[in-house]
Amino acid sequence: MNCIAEAHLLSRPHTAFSTQLNDLLRIFEPAVQLAIWQRPVDPLIAGYLNASLADMGSGFRQQLKPGESPDFSRLPGGEGRDALTTDIALLADILGELLDAKTIGLRLEVIGQAMCPRLHVDRLGIRLLCTYRGPGSEWVDDEGVDRSRLGAGANGLPDGSSGLLGPSSRIEVIPSFAVALLKGSLWQGNAGRGVIHRSPAVAPNEAPRILLAMDAGW
Image (tube, rainbow, N blue to C red):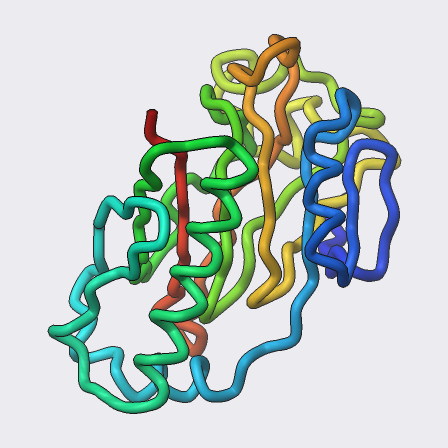
């Protein structure tokens, strides 16, 4: 029950994995709570972020309009910054087109510890996540889970002993550089559902983690 597995090794009823961008559209299927577009690690971006950690501070918060690129001008220039800027602009355009959003709010966060260490469901529509550095977000499929044990229903007990996870439950990990769409409980027709997930623990040798989160603005 406490095993952690990379998402690309598994198939679950309420998740969609693919190496094809267009398959992110499966997030609109009523049963699907998580859609993952698996991409290889971009060594140019990964190397640039490792070299630029001291310049990143706590990260960036920006709002983009369609076709706009994020402003990383306070970071060192070069091909790595250009690649990062281009990738995030692409992901913003993808989410904006999927959700017909007028703006996209982005957070590129530099994280030294788990922000949300308990399994939970977000009260939102659809959020995009991409981990550029460190361990990816963890999640568990609906099957065998007792949702009444989420939040206060856990009675303060850890995820592994609260009764939330069933005998067949398995904590899984979104791979680095994969693009994930997470459906929350406020998506139309999704009340009482939403992907169950949490932030991973960040070991000292993996810190800091760099996570991109994007939400649609209207």
